[in-house]
Length: 156
Image (cartoon, rainbow, N blue to C red; front, side):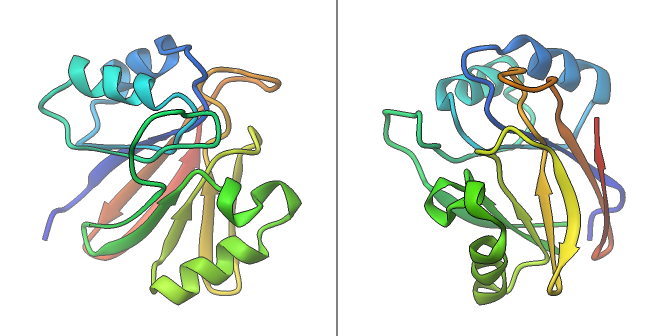
């Protein structure tokens, strides 16, 4: 099992790629999750760092083909990656928690609201990195460190 894997989590870049490029250069992650709303930014990030595995999902502002959600495992931790619009994230977190419980994940990573969130709810960790593009809120991203089935999350 991988020890101390650092994962960067981005969402809602909306065409503003620079924070993501800078964060990857500074943080040196082993993996990246991009949660939609400019899927092409996620693809550009992947092109800039082809040696870093990246999982990308589409959001409500993405008009291209791509997965709307993924369940992935990293270092013994299971994640649901979703933009959040299909789970009505702007109306609350109940549907996100329900989806996470149904899929048997430890962490639900989502965006859509442009508001960072880092909390446990009904046994599921909810993690929203906010907006990488700084749209309507201060720009930011998330860091998840996994170590042998344990994890910790940080907003930056």
